[in-house]
Length: 279
Image (cartoon, rainbow, N blue to C red; front, side, top):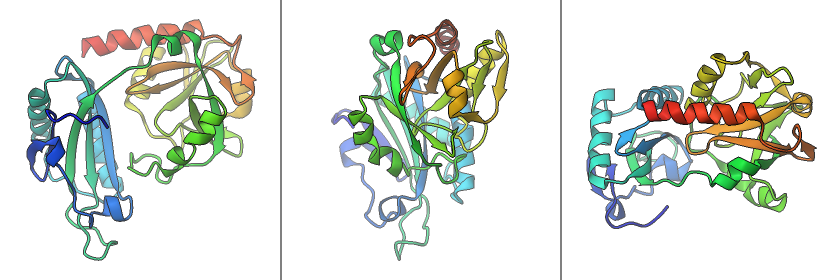
């Protein structure tokens, strides 16, 4: 996280300078890694697809037995005030809901709601033009539909990813792939069908928008995707809030298609950028 004395955050029901925003060590986020979060982009002072992110935030809270201390309208108001105060041209806003201050380090307390905002840098054009390599790892997240703060596996694999000269890791189990630590996965079949895993994945907002856009031009499927499906795929790509759409040209030792970003992926990225500008 960048240090910026001018930035502010929302914590304990008020907006304070970021450098003065702290949690007590008894919080379950610290003691047990218990909490949820969500993250959205802000362009020219306006949140992008905010309603979708708030809906998922409250859904994650419900799945993790946490209560959000603000109504949707009150949360929107706090976000708006924070964005206005920080005045960043392009940024990312993170909402975190923790398990609260725990008397014994296990039982939840009153959840703590935090909202931070930081400058945002999108992927370099070279990554989009050349595509990326990814690796796979056998793992499925606990409670995949909830966006929890537990990213232990993804963080533990960072060095393995770097050692493979890759950009990210795709989780799989028994040859069926699911998701990345922070992204969703798609393939394009030989007949230009857009396919994404249906089970054991976080329902990404960008995933939702890409499926919506894809349905206007292509056949789409949400189903199980196997390593063999990837080997036969014409194209592959990942989606996320910050990365939008990134072409994948290699998975482990498998080269996808002709090893270059495909036209379907490029077209969907163009469509997604247009959709974002409309919001």
